[in-house]
Image 1 (cartoon, rainbow, N blue to C red):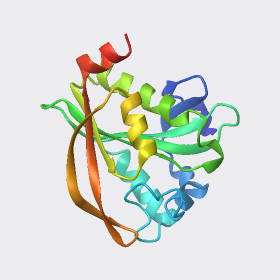
Image 2 (cartoon, rainbow, N blue to C red; image 1 turned 30 degrees about the vertical axis):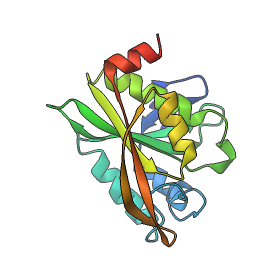
Image 3 (cartoon, helix red, strand yellow; image 1 turned 90 degrees about the vertical axis):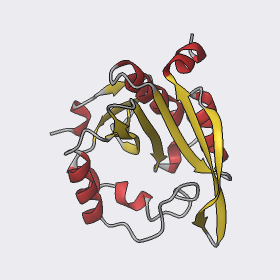
Length: 186
């Protein structure tokens, strides 16, 4: 079975599809052991193994609290990252956005923007979310730019809330309401 045969959301340069256990046999687990890939996120604290990746994928597919999708290049059907709406709350109608682009050869090519837009569109229009939010380290300007691109506004700062590479870092919180998102893209 080709994992490319299960597109869920389709863009110009990528498709978003479910994660499969077979993804753990590819480069996916190595992303979380790569200091450069994990520089701006909370990963790369403990070694990440293919078995841990398989367990994560198994758990991710058993819940409706998280929508975690593989980002796949349309050019070569290669799994290059993941994007997610996590902690989907059915009463508050909110979710947390997260993304990782593990394939460094695709950095700077608009993959994050397209994946973010596809998933936020889906969150607001198919899942009927009212609010999508994210948090990022104060030194992660790429994620801050992505949040702004998606129409998110800075909502606050959790001071020295993370410890990474020997220093405490602020976490900047962003969020966007459905009405703001729609006006942003009108």
